[in-house]
Image (cartoon, rainbow, N blue to C red; front, side):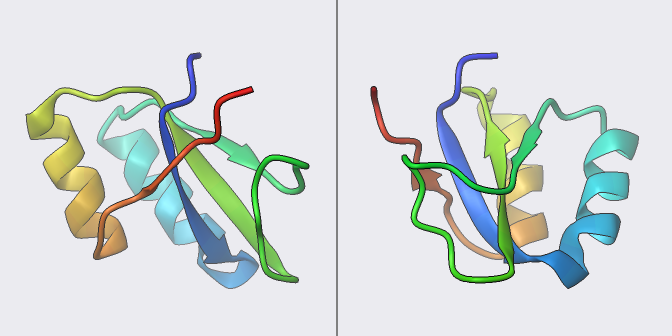
Amino acid sequence: MEKSFYYSVPWSDVGYLKETLQALEIPFAIEQSSDKLQLAAGDVAFVFPDLHVRVYRHVHELFGNHGRAYPVS
């Protein structure tokens, strides 16, 4: 999966978000620690590829804002 953008969320939100994304069949990955991402202590990243605008709208509504661009290598 080519990584395009991500959201940083606390561990306590992972279960609900993961189940919702799987139910909507939206592709994602979860990263706990990365040299590329600046995550606060206790946070994880939901990472997404480029998405069709209609699919992105669901992600935007679920997370409540726009994701951050995934750093290029």
